Amino acid sequence: MKKLNLGCGEDYRKGWINVDLRDNVKSDMKFDLNKFPYPFKDNSIDECFMQNTLPQLKEPIRVIKEMVRVTKKNGKITIIECHATNYSTFTFPIPNTINITENTFNEPGLKLFELEDKIKLVKKEFIYTHWWKRFIPFKFALKIFLLGLYDKIKFEFEVLK
Image 1 (cartoon, rainbow, N blue to C red):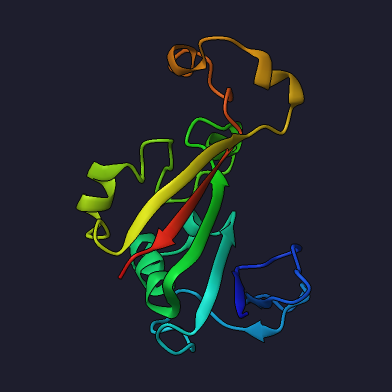
Image 2: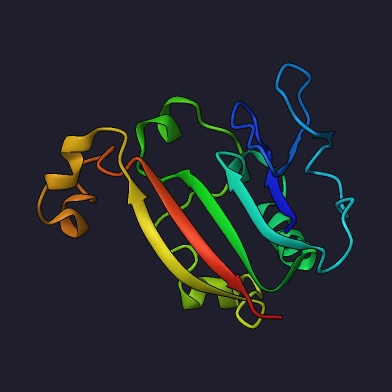
């Protein structure tokens, strides 16, 4: 089973192909994720993972399409990123980046990105850095008023092709 960890950073995963551009992190392959196509054959990967990388790339939707290209049918793609209302989004703004919310990869988003027939959103969940945030009621409404309510969001996709 081939697993790909794109933009691995400090998250080196044993048994995975860990890819990063930087020299100061442990990786199995040094590669710039802004260069296309990626050096993997079509339908050669069983599982693709990316964390805290997508908004930093020049063409994030093209990156997702590249992940779909290399992942086998019925394979899994997992993306974990900071929520658009997280403090770090405002503290370290990166020009021309994608802001990700719980609605980014819903049906209209997948259609807009021309991914609706290529991947299916199987699961999304919020990841809280601070445990007490899990117990705040009415988050769906309060998120408008309380910046930093959500820390990260995790999307799991099934590749359809």
